[in-house]
Image 1 (cartoon, rainbow, N blue to C red):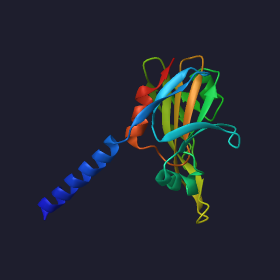
Image 2: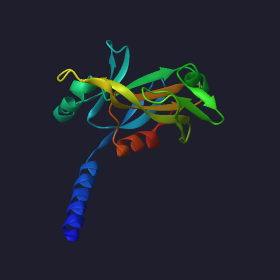
Image 3: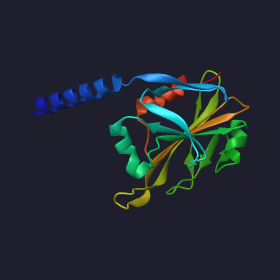
Image 4: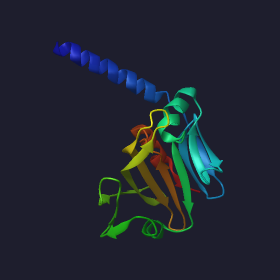
Length: 182
């Protein structure tokens, strides 16, 4: 019985690992704001008049269905600020205590954010409980997981904000590890 459990776990792990290894990435570059990062090849970043900004959307039929009902068809929003990290965060819903920032979400009033940094930027990351609304079922609740990833080179700050659904860990890591100001 124990061997069977180990075998099932092993096979499942191989299937998941194979699925993740088959994701191809491409470089997204923004010449106006002078930054780039790796993005799954099947995702597209475009300007949305309705959202009044840039959004990342899926292009495959399967992902379109996954994101359409509860996530408005949006994987993440991309925002640009002409200020450094500290000014950007302080003008939002963030407070600084010591070397760390704190924010709030729908459940907690003191969410500590994680400091992150790359080769030519510093930033913060946090995951908040956020609201989602599903058209098909009418479901509406604080049941989403919104990720906020800020990258700053001291003169400008870029925010990637997911729309109620967390990025898979390997995709999140690839975006963060590849992010660069040009």
